[in-house]
Image 1 (cartoon, rainbow, N blue to C red):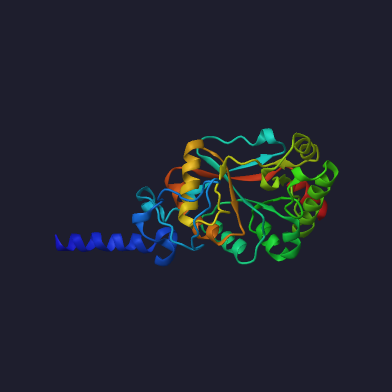
Image 2 (cartoon, rainbow, N blue to C red):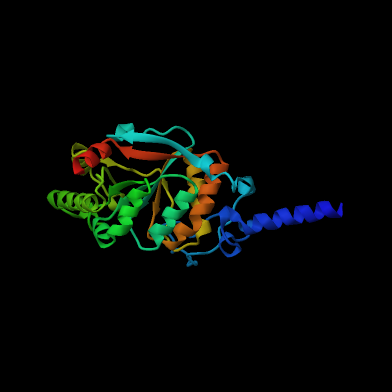
Length: 283
């Protein structure tokens, strides 16, 4: 009996110290595991929280630490919005606004650890400022897209100015990465019917959002992970909006990916149909 108690205690200690393969200071307490998210309502001022606050896992995820590869799903090639059809329990990970030194690179390391691919919607001026990181994204096998040149709210611009901002952003990302930025996301999700039609007619696929992580609020990583999972459970599938410019996003990502795997989700890799043609042309 004494030996059995010791074994159980050792197992619990192991779980407490290894959430998603992170240290105890990053893993946090299982007692706060995916607690209800607070401060994510747009009607209230978010509560300040440390960007690297602990994120713990629910009990269903405890046994998934050694099988991260089970999260990787199929590759979906798209040339238009109509091609973006996900099955139940399929998600697409997307990261906006980068690349950002240290944060983007940390996220790339975590994605590699879990053997999943994401889509990075890069701001043109950020890609030009950090070209080596932008190329790391492509070299790691991830998909890239654009997010305008300076993250402008296109609804506040004239049509011609908005188009120029989209084109400049795409050209900047493509020139740095040598990969066609075939996917596009509107900053602030502020689109218009006319702009959406223009984007589609210029061989770009708009990536809308079904699950907004709201990682841009000043809340804890645990709150972001909780909100993301709750929203995803309500939808059952979808494109998840994240940002590779926030420390809290990198801090919560291992727990989020472990939880996704534990609940049977698969991460779908997006590819634009123009990607292979662009690479052949460049070479």
